[in-house]
Each structure stands twice: as structure tokens, then as C-alpha cells.
Image (cartoon, rainbow, N blue to C red; front, side, top):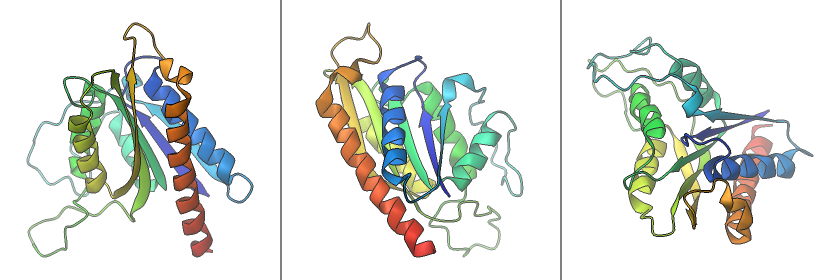
Length: 208
């Protein structure tokens, strides 16, 4: 079984961010369903109570430092075979909802840590490198690079290889879900979904 996890940092119901994440997940499922059993899950961070990182300084092994709704999300991140992560752009970065999750994932041990410091007790919780992709949504004149860098750093920390970015600049802030009227952006999402599908199928076949 392949576990596909989609996480939205959009606070808006039925947003373009949500639309793209769900569309890509549906495409991956459609591409793989004849050969692989795939389990998909969509998490909207707006619907979860997550406290901000408190910079407690304590090593979170064997447990995590704060216990709230994020603990279930940690578990899903650990076991995901593929991650789709999306956010609207606020002040040249990701949303507050997305940033809360990103900051709290500091509790995962850095993927590049090589057990060279005997005093460092962070436990490696992420078993493997997984493929993933980003979705970023803003206005027509939005600068996407700031948010892209934030998510890229997040992906590196949690062992996700970035296989593509779908960016969309909405022409109207007062309407939600407008990306559905832009076939060029949908095609870009389809292309990345196909790439992820091929990677997941190849990985699954090699594991048999």
C-alpha cells in the first residue's frame, strides 16, 4: 500500500490551494489504482488546534515536547510515502497555519545528523526519503520565492524530495477556488502528479 498525504495551510474552505491538492491526489490515485493500492488523506490545518513552537530547548526523545492535535499529524507524516503540501502566500511567506506545522516539525531529527555527538539524543523518526510536491497560491503579482524557500527547507528537514511546484496567481482575491478556471495551471498539476505517480510505482515495484 502507498500512503499519500496532502496538507493544506489555507484557512479558507474550498480554496484554490485545497482544490489543487485534492486534484493532484485524485490524479495520482487514478494513475496508480490499477496496479497499486493507494490510501489518500487530506489534512486541513485550519481545523486542528496546534500550538506554536515554544523553543523549549529540551530534546524531545522519546516523546514530543508539546501534546496537541499535531501529534496525530506527526504520525501521518512519519508513515507517508508521498506528501503534497500547499499554502497561500501571506507577506511573501506561507500562512500562519502552515508555519505552525513547519516550526513544530523541528522535533524530527535532522536527516543529515550522523550520530557523531553522543550527547545528542534526538531519535530519527523518519525512516526513508519520500517524494513530494508543493502548491503555492497568491495574487497575480505575488512573489512566490519566499514561500518556496520555506517549504523547500521544511521538505529537506522531513526527508521529502521536492518533485515540483504548482504556483497560481489568482486574478480575484474575493473569489475562492478560481484555479478551476485555469486549465494551464491544472495541466501543470497533472504533469507533477504523473511524475509522482511514476516515482511511487517504481519504488513500489522495487520493494516487491
